[in-house]
Image: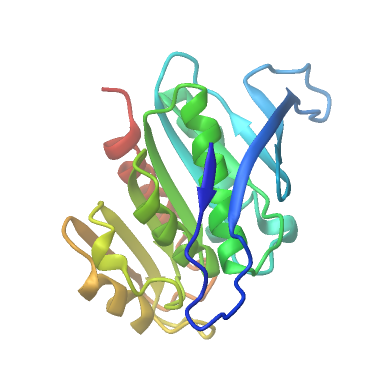
Length: 240
């Protein structure tokens, strides 16, 4: 499948923002002292714009999935997530409840259009192996990436945006999919007014959870973040 994004306005000679998946490699992850588990995989998606790597935790026979992405810095935090490694904890929990998870690494962290293409490619990959109901979750910069991706990809049923930035969310009113926003009231990087603004412009159903005294990484109340995300994913991607 090939995806094309509308280039930024005012770019007189825009780059051709397209991505096609050219191949997939998957192998069981190597984890300390444990035998290989075919349900816990390292995945590499070959594309016309470079390789997307990800960690896939599979629930066989079910069609719901969660895809997660990080903030603009990328790196070692991409697959762990904020709020005391909430992405990793969900990946350990959700497959046993009927939802697969895919935790992606960006090809070019911080480049908005490229990261949206990464998410679109990840959605296409999961759709190709049977996913029908996908929830996206992103933190900070990624909180806007998931909103933009959900506008484009029909298989995305719902979106979780954690401590999001405003850039990239201008058309959130056109997304028309369930939205969960979580933000800390003491976020010193992206003020919680960003989530309040997105919430006001988004269509129903929508929910805004403010974490009292929570910082950008939501580490002050990780269990509330985990609980809210878990329940939202099960509602929109759990077994039917």
